[in-house]
Image (cartoon, rainbow, N blue to C red; front, side):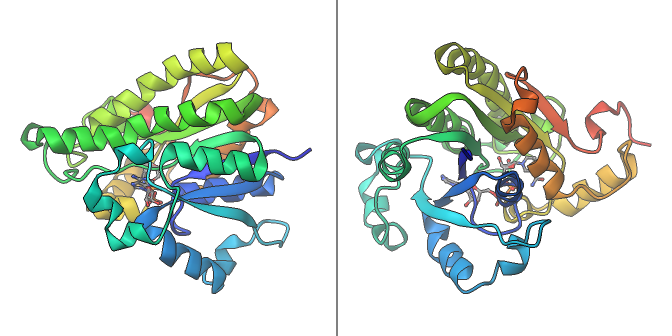
Length: 286
Ligand code: NAD
């Protein structure tokens, strides 16, 4: 029987979430995605109008099928958490059941169980501010959207994950090395995500033999990365300085996620896996 994956954080065909969906689909998994509520309409209409058809194409020529798109805002765990101004915001009012708990309930109702959970989302409203100039509110918002969102997803999806399943998230080396420009507490958020990956691996492993890993990905010109503003420089830097002087393709990250979700990775859990052309191993730029 094929596996079923829920991928949180897909809103176009440029990011890592999309690439992971494709690699999992190519490996035979059924694909469900969670799309940020404000991006839902444009994503769904583009999907239905065929705007993504070229990038839906898999190696064997077939097109990736997304069985269902769920609206999701991973900053809210249940309806009681949603402030009035968000509830009535017109970008949210059109959708329903988009808190983490409700999405997990909907997936349970629609499909029963999943095997693979992917967290490919981050948000830091003050990312362009240096850490030392970040407000408390901005810092906590970065942690809420980028780190706690993973705990919340795992908490709510664990009960419907099959024994032996796999969860994976995306992190960035700014958690452990200084990357000027990755501010607003986003570096802290990634450090929390990596630490949490270990503790969650223990808890989910003991509970249901579920493996929990994170991929430390190199720079990609996604929508989120472009919003930070320094992505072209980081891509150039990586090309110049990494052991492998080649472009990093989103597909290479997707394939790693598919590997981690597969039985080939049956003893890998609590790990940070670098998919960055080896840049993390360099001590100085050359
Ligand atoms: P992306 O824009 O494709 O993905 C980010 C997604 O997060 C978007 O779809 C956005 O709609 C969604 N999102 C934001 N806030 C949300 C919320 N509250 N609830 C639900 N969804 C929300 O960009 P990406 O760069 O592919 O990012 C995916 C992951 O990869 C992130 O964790 C990011 O930090 C990580 N990453 C990216 C790079 C890079 O260079 N692009 C490098 C390393 C790690």
